Length: 291
Image 1 (tube, rainbow, N blue to C red):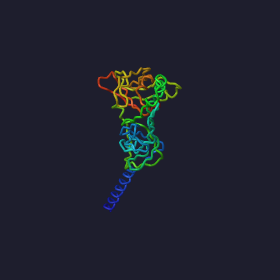
Image 2: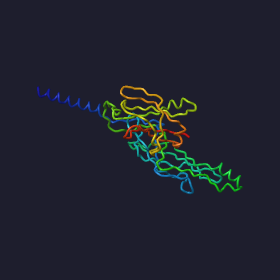
Image 3: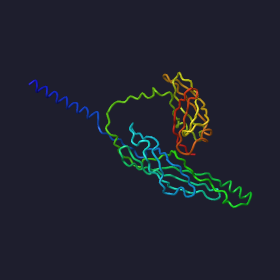
């Protein structure tokens, strides 16, 4: 009898363990919503000049950074993107500038599903129309001697596209656990772009940022890199500061006219550095600029 009870107890323990494992480890899917933004990076230079670029030509591109939904990577950075030249207008006589646009078509999720994309990037060259007309008036020459500038798109250009329709992505077997986020403990500086303050004004004059550093740290902030290129540091003016727990939260700003000269149309990355530190400490932000 004791042996029978022992076997029953072991059987119940095995069943309980199995059920516990089923609860803790399970296959999971996550919904990738329509209009989820996907940042794309071109892998080749494009110049709308001569016969170098044709409408419909395929463009080598990749996903610039992970697409994350509910803490899960659904489209991984580096995944190839199918893109093509959607429209191209060569530069013309009389200073007429060239134009070129790229359309993103599709990429792939982490479980191999085809993700249809919409959206793309438009690039214009530089118009020389005013110069052409002026010279024609002064020296009485035909306009054909001064062409506009061709539209050029360097490799590494980042633009955004959007998921065309929602779908569920298999993220594999997930172990259910409560994750405690302590990454902030290793961060010496964090920065947030105050977008709401910008959009609340009809004609804003400043970009404003909220910067958080340890209370004991010395600080002096400047933008020293744009789109991964080093620039002459642009100083940020401090508006206010408050102490929260053991950190200092600082509001700082820079004139839009000062910074916009360094920015490209479309997606830009800027790096704000604490230049008071001997070792470079910086935070990177992504801005979508329409100029």
